[in-house]
Length: 569
Ligand code: GLN
Image 1 (tube, protein in one colour):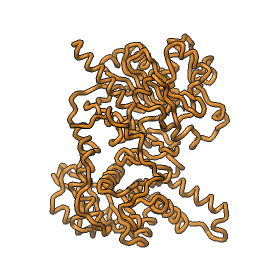
Image 2 (cartoon, rainbow, N blue to C red):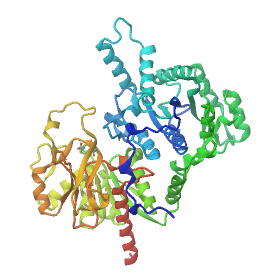
Image 3 (cartoon, protein in one colour):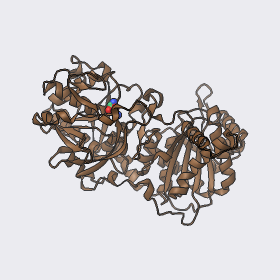
Image 4 (cartoon, protein in one colour):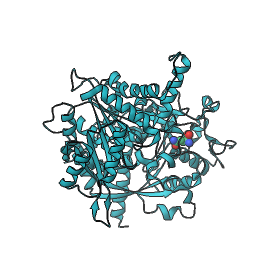
């Protein structure tokens, strides 16, 4: 029997903050460091392998965190276009980070922080700041040792300050790239210094040549050679493949790459990323890791809850169609956390959420009904800039007028406010000043302290802020709590000068920031389910703690679908 999510406190509210990790299963031992490098090609899924190994170690009672080192020169991915890099994931402490950190949090149900994502830009910035301060006075500042020392310091920070049993560090990019050389050199040095407390997992590809009808090991051999040239002998090889590896092939890879026979691990393509911990367990990745680090490897990881979730996800009793309106939909990674949060909420409701991707630029007053009439819910995604904005507003108008469950996130909420101002309050041409700085009715506008901000990196309202939920509101009912905390990433805000007008006309503020009075959520009591939130709830949904707003939204969609069935439509 799946657990009933509605009778339990939402676990996401009790995510374990990084700083309170105390109990160490390694009592008295040093933190163990595991590096995950990638070879042959990018996109082999280092993040998922790292998160799956971490899940297995966590399931054995160890405290684990995962870190991503990104070899690009941006200080953080906050200034990157989602087309370049997918979603920007925001941590509690307001760091704009790589989307892999989202996987880490979703798999482990722990929080990450700024310390979990370091880029080359940040490493150089730290070193240059130290140089200006005079820390290296008299010395020539060089890639080795100064840059590599800074990389090593950032890696060890998590072990030294937070006392984790395991720190798993994923090195972005592919071995052999010029830009990842200092990282591989830092790994080489750490491996030498730490001996048995450190190991390297290399993820490679074993391609299948259809014409030859064979799996090929040569790319793996070459990428291990490349690592060896840099002085790093991998301890474990994880081989991504479309077909099962034969015993013979494993032995061949082991022999050519100097790894133990049981350290050649198969990573076969999976139906869902949530299968990967179980696949890695079957391959005994956790056991091999523990043995190599000189730790007890008997017994098994406790994955009962995880397995129950995967079962609910894979065996839904029904399906609901939810439209996701955005402007980056060609690249689904741009909405990674939203997609995963819908999967978590679907499993809680025992339904499969079928996402219908809707390009905001293509929605018009003429075609909106045709595009939305078969949906059971509408989610309007976050975003920046003018492109596609009117399509979002049209979609929201349809959802509002037709009782279709609506969930607006960040820009999605701002568009709902603009739509309501124009079409219900009669404030013609109302807008957000992000798009129309001279609008007559700036219902969404910049707060005073943002007006003077010119620099782009890390200057938005970022990270966790408190929000008080009003008695009797739908958000309060959905959360089952009167005070919540959610993560933000935006500059513009609901303009409180219009609040009374909105509330008198049926759109109310359910959630207010208790410190500055900002409107953080809006809703329409006279609608089956219409909520807009200025924050990003998707960042806090995890497998163990699906987010209440997503659960409530999917539940409302299920109700629409049930009603439609009863009505025989
Ligand atoms: N562009 C909007 C703002 O900066 C919304 C941002 C978002 O959706 N994350 O306020």
